[in-house]
Image (cartoon, rainbow, N blue to C red; front, side, top):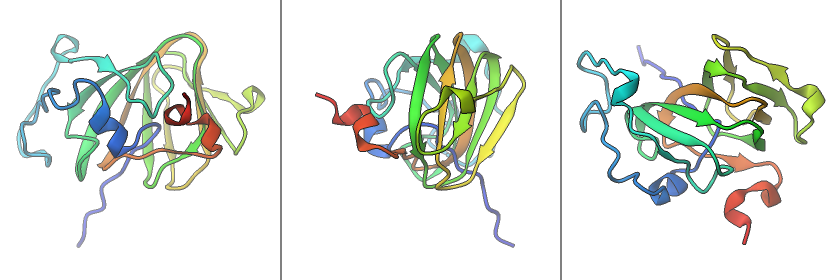
Length: 168
């Protein structure tokens, strides 16, 4: 029986991840083995935070817990976002799993960012969006989410003008 692993994406292209400052030096706590074959335990102090990739709005910080989002295979990461941070409508090529760990995080569906369509997700909330699902996100007060899935990770904005990589 073939096992289908989840894939994530509220946020970045594989190419953008590779251009992410410090991405090459981010150590995978699992080593080079991207399929969990050993017991791993990480504390908050073990996490190495870096600035987000150019495919996302500025201000977020990321910590890779497992795997490499730019490569094929499972990965898990945490994203800390400041108050007011938002991601315009976008899609991902694979399913996305998001768990809210702390603070505020809100998500909505559709092709246009509309704050009235946001659903507030307090700490402990969980969301799943299927591949190709048009959605957007915002953190009103700042917060931390954990995302997991299968790489390579990619993001495609509904409106190319919303893509931070297209701004000069």
